[in-house]
Image 1 (tube, one colour):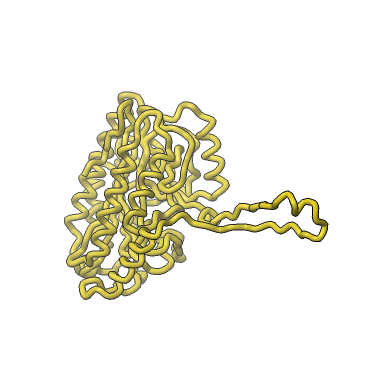
Image 2 (spheres, one colour):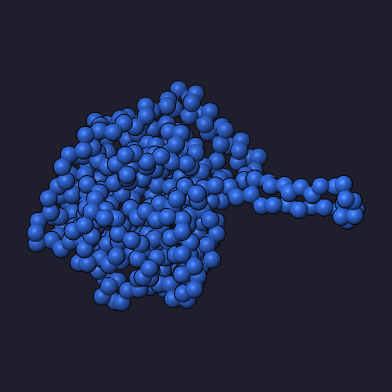
Length: 376
């Protein structure tokens, strides 16, 4: 679960720090670190193209041209248009009604004997830690245990997905399973987040707050689970189908999961971060899907969100290092990648109401590759 919000300047500072540090051994988590709106702007570059003759003529006024462009092939654009048309016109692909805010119940209690992360005592959103979390043998054993529990919880949560079930009921069941295991639900109280799990339905990109809304036949829902066990966080999420889901949304979910695994496949000690985003973006673009650039992956361990920050869409120049845990968590959309956030400051939706899907694993960087610690 990526609940960390950072500004563009913080992201730039983090990137500079990461590039300067040769020791980058942390777990990559499919996190949702939010970047500022300015990160999505297309930047124009001035083109000064003048012939030698123009330099000798006093009557010629030099003009500066600015070209704005976005790399997209004709085939990719055709696929995107076809998908949108399919979503609008197919008999089995009716447009779902817009997501509406339901009633949010009171936060659930956690027994006193269960250790709690330090941020629970404050409603302030924690800063992204600049620490690159490298784990010793004992730390890795605890990370494995936390991640294994998170994987079991998200699998269980998926069995609850069906029409008429409320996301609040899913939150309650997840909460109980986590505390029964002697763990703490990491989202609860993180920067004031009121629930134990994130449930993001249809056009909700991430950070959906469980409420009284009932799931409908044809919905998709991402369930994002993070547990805090023996001082370590384990983070994972998965998008589930509810009932009879149309073909376009089924394909979105399938390709999003494929993108996550393609990003993980290039991870190993010394691998460039930019290869992760490149592999994810290339696969998504083949199917005409957008990759959301406002939320990124992150390091994880005893701290919920730390450097390194993992971009799923842009080149990034630093390297991965051995025995670090990170979260890889791409978000893909059927339409725009622009987003709007509700007044609760958490629930983030696509600006055009198009569906979004997300998958997330915590992985351990090794000499030869990446070990998935939250394997479903």
